[in-house]
Image (tube, rainbow, N blue to C red; front, side):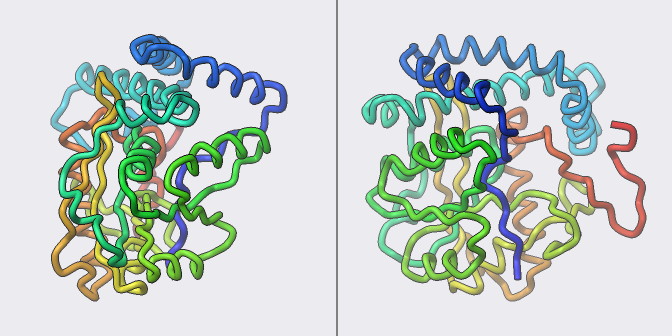
Length: 306
């Protein structure tokens, strides 16, 4: 059975620090978007300077995926990534606290919207771009259809409540905690609730196959293909891109002849399509996690010493 990919990474428990952080985010939601983005620009540069381990991981990932680029170009791209990462994090303030009108104005939903009409079982392939939360909010705010998502519970109760309420403010979505397992997700899919899935992660060898990703054999979980097969669902990619005015969330046409019955081939196809999406906005992909941490056949780690 496939592993459940987390919909986001857990934040550490912080008591009063997290409570003050929530107050800050609620105040931030009242500011013009240009101010929020300016603060994100500043925070991104600070994080780039102080988060040395994450910076080195991002540079390693970038070097693996874009070996033709020199050190200066790579370092500049990683610095831009930290800015996009910080801006997207601060954007959660208005995504979850601003007025409905503000949110709908700042989130543009484009592409093959007809692919999400009706109630056909559908798995949404939502890669780990910095705007992944904006993508979910855009779908639930702009479309009448009810959606299903996976939720990784946070260690801090205040943060967990804030994030959970933020993700459920539009469309009465069906949110399933990871600890609940697969059955409620498959049941929701079969009932016609599209599942917002982020399967482009390395969770080790369990329920994974090694398939190419930017020309490198990469451990990749097979949940997209398996969910589609179990629920007899089609796969529709949804890609979110941060823009000066908010976010553009594009719904792509359903994949043809997917799943194919060959899990490894399906997962390889997913990575090939993901590469194309990344090349459209490379600095906005989530580079700060160890995408290549699991190596086949005793190959040396890309992250030794980091």
